[in-house]
Image (cartoon, one colour):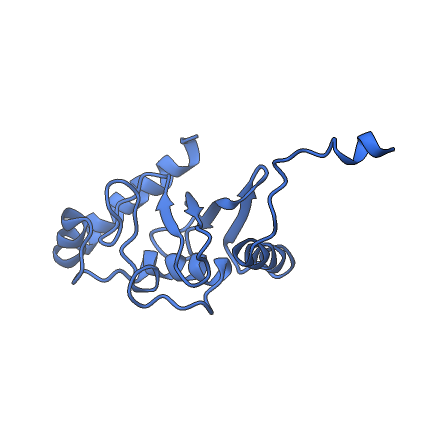
Length: 165
């Protein structure tokens, strides 16, 4: 019997405040998922999440399924996670590498935001860009100067989101 006690894997991580909070975030997103959003930790790693945001209905983003990753540190929820789109995007506030220029992920972060709130904010950013702080200057320019062309480029990204891995 004594030998069994020592055979547990040493890799079982102690539960830190960040991990406890992320478990709570995960339970909430499972039991009460916001519309058009899903997210879950990667296998055995509560600190790294995969998420999907569906493009909001009746917008150029409608029908898109956009993949993201969220990387949390042990100082969560006092510090925001690093959030990135894995899907290719065309948006004034999304950098080429998928990073997102969004105030709540930078200077307006608050520990009251959980994973559901982060993803919901990113989803509303899709339809409501801020062309004044462009991460993608081309997208910002097209958004400001030619909405029809902008919407066409967004539709292309939406269609790519169906076939990409």
